[in-house]
Every structure is written in structure tokens, then in C-alpha cells.
Length: 430
Image (cartoon, rainbow, N blue to C red):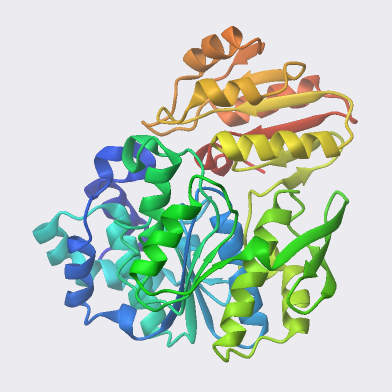
């Protein structure tokens, strides 16, 4: 019998892991996941689910929806990836991590299948999540796609609702190099006769979703046509958002404990998703929505979304890591007051780093670094590339050395922002 630590080592070392090595770990069909789940007696058929895809914000949307369902009294599973600190963050029920014993027992049971199928790390964790949710007899599970949608391992579920938050340029080496191609992959989660909610409307992706939905006879709902943000007020720890509901001609003010201004986009997707569930007779009162959004972090353990970990100087973590995510971060910086900006950044090699660097403020002091994974872009290469874009700074071998240096140089009214990669953020020692 392996210990929990030995089990994790086995899973990390035996299975190709996208977060570490990139596209070589990506399996382009669902057969492994189907076979693993057949071996487990198809746990994914034993609970209701909501399926969420999108280039940015799908993690926030997943956690907000899970918090709302939980607050409304449903026993709620939540599957997301990657994790920041603890592997078990990927698999939660009512905000609690799955147990170490479950991970060990599951691995013991599945080892013969691992040897037979040679699955990826992600395929195993998806099967593990489905098995846990079935064992725990959850009322509903919120399932976030890993990458894309059509060929994502999670795409063997038949959900109550499919949600596609937005489309942007990311993972183009796998999903395609145009917004239409990327939208086609995400649209792959739309199922026969199952309503699909689209968050952000953009000209390139709208016809792709319309075509897929009509082929599948799936009701298609564009959230922005029914809800819009009238106003928002920003304070360091909370975001107050006034949302107009066009159907009911009502306004509601929500206080979010996720203070990033980009949540003003995500909340529209969330509210439309809740409305669609209510139409399906899910009992989700307005008070549960309001209460849940005020404490998403507490209810679900979401971290790394404009998260302040220190004051004077303020140190903020954000997992923004692609062009659209960094654009939203740049908008956020314009709303925050600080004296000088210190940016600690690191990326993985398969990002469009040249485009991202163009979006970053030229006046900040930069600390170039990398996450400790093979996929990370070398900090010296990043520094050289950044210099060509007019960004100046020094290179550091790891994020905590960079943070130490930034803290030495920052005054109490300065802002230190760490971003560029989930893996970089996960290595910060708070």
C-alpha cells in the first residue's frame, strides 16, 4: 500500500502532465477517459453536472456557481485544474478537498488500467473526480474543462447546462490559430437538447456557436443579451457590482469577494447560468446568489484572482497568463492607486509572450523569473525579449528570490504584482 506522498509521486512521474511538459501530454480523443470510466462503472452518470469552458474566467465562473449551488442547499462537487498548492484542490465537495485516503485507494484500484492504457495525468484526475462525486452522492458537480472542450477529457458528461464563458487566443498550437477554430473546439461541449449559455459575444465566435447549437437542437442563450453591468465600485477587498436584469426589468447589487474588475464580465455569465437552472426547476433563491457571491473564496477556496497577500507594500497575485487575461489586468491597474509598480512575471514557453509583453506598462520595474517546471520559459530569455519591448528589469531563478528583491526595493505605497503563470503564482511562499 502506497502512502499519499508516494501515490502523488507515482501519478506525477508515471503520467504525462500537460502543465509540466505541454502539448505532448494532450490526448486528442476521449477513448482513454471512456475506458477508465467504464472500468469504474461510469461514475459520471450517477450525478447531475454543469459543464464550463472558456479561454479566461472559467475557474472564477465555476467557483461562483459552485458557491451559489452550495448556499442554495445542494451538495456540490467542483472539479477544476490546475491546482495551486495541493493536488486535492482539483476535487472538492462543498468546498472541502477530497481525502488523501480516497486518492490513495483510487490510485491502487486504477494502476492496472494505467499500465494498460498509458493515460495522461489529466485523464486520470478526471476519472478520479467523477468517482469521488459518485461516491459522495453529490446533487450536482460543476465540471471545468481543462483545455478546449470537444476533445477535453471532461467531455463525456451529459450536463444539465453547458457554459462557455469567452473565447480568446490561448493554446493555439493545439486548438487552432483563429478565434473561429478555438470557438469550434469550445463549442464541442454543447450537447443534444441541452441549453448552452455563452458569456461574452464576439463577432468571430457567435456564428460558430449558433451553428453548433442548431445542429444539436440545443437552446442557445447569450448572457449579455439578458444581463448587463450598470455600474461597479471597486475597493481593495470587494467589488460592488450593480447588474440589470433585462427580463425582469430589475437591478441587483452584488458584493463580490473576488475583487478583480474582470469579474464584472464573469458575473453576467454566472447570473444567466443560474437563471437557466431556475427554469429547469432548480431551487436557487435570489438571497442564496447574493450571499454566495460575497464569500466565494471562503466557500470554495478559490485563490490567485487579484488576491492581496500582503499590505504596505501591497503584494497581489493573479493567475492571468494570456493576452486577454493580461489586458484585463492592465485595466485593473488603471483603477488602483499606488506609487510605483513592481511586476514579477514568468511565462510558459507556449504562450504568445511577444504580444503579452506589448501590453505591459513600460514604467514598471520588472523582475523576470520562471516556475520550476520544464515548460517554463527561461528567465534570461524572457528578460532579453522584454528588453526589446521596452521593459527593463533583472532576471531571477525563482519567484521567491524575485519577491524578496522586490520587497527590498518597494516603498510602502508601492504595488508588487506577480502574474504570468498559474505555476509561478503557486510557488509563492506566503
